Length: 144
Image 1: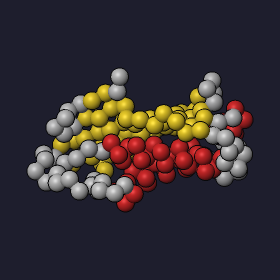
Image 2 (image 1 turned 180 degrees about the vertical axis):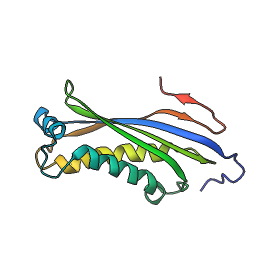
Image 3 (image 1 turned 60 degrees about the horizontal axis):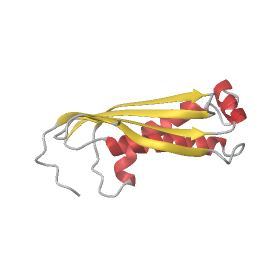
Image 4 (image 1 turned 90 degrees about the vertical axis):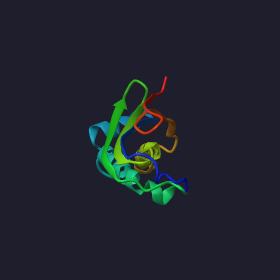
């Protein structure tokens, strides 16, 4: 692991996004709350939060961080038949929180896939990326 012991403790924030595309009827079922397994978006939101807290257990050499805030937004887009996930994660620490935010996004989207795979195996997860990070020596960065 990289030694971060000499780094300053600062407020750090990361914002990520990703998408899961699906058939229109799958999305309508999610929006209407008619899925057999329950509220897909609520369960995916909880899964994303849980994943952010378990990132150091999943990614080798990733530092465990004291997460101070997690927000998972799941927004259906009926025009493009997809759900957008945006994760915002905060910490006060000595290293960045980007991997936790990316992990949260991926797991939230995978949870949607898992819950809906019985009716739509052709779903596609795409566009998972870092949108913004702030804090630490490298300062503020925003995706162009």
